[in-house]
Length: 146
Image (cartoon, rainbow, N blue to C red; front, side, top):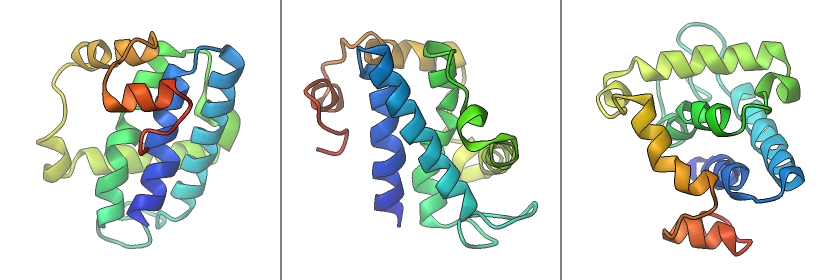
């Protein structure tokens, strides 16, 4: 499941940032948001809810970096709102899940310290100038996992 969700969320995250055409960005964002909506439907309800479990799984740890990077999309593509695609209830559940995961020591201890540093890292993707393997794959029409 971790690989499936990673492809549906991580790869599409980069497309939202890198597609040069606003319509393609919007299409990628809708795919990204719908994937998040499907993912969050698998998260158990309540304060201890994780992916199909009441404790964190490998799927949670594989996906949380991309959920925490939603702020990057908000920064570079402020016109897109996840709640407009998946609805307020699912978006609120996603936020609660994200906050819960971010408090886990394994996640908290590996997070960036300053959002501006995070934005600097992703600016080259948002401008379409990234020359990393991921940048080249997405720029040529592929996926981050190609």
